[in-house]
Image 1: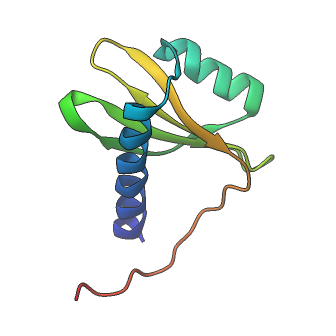
Image 2: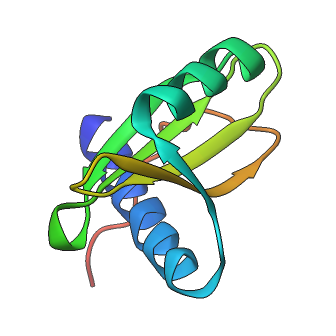
Length: 99
């Protein structure tokens, strides 16, 4: 189950980095972003991964509302909102074996 979650998190990280290159984002100090996600949306951290050049990708979600947010924190401490949406669900399905 942990391996599956790790793989899913890494896939989300790759998507986040791709989106980061294309779209303008809202960025602020990490403490401010985390506080807003927690207090305004009831989201808590569900996954984390290391991206290119020391960036950290995180997935936040709320069990209550189903909202989710992907953030990327740069080495300088700035955190950018990369993507967000609704209907978040935890998954524990097995991935097919490598071909």
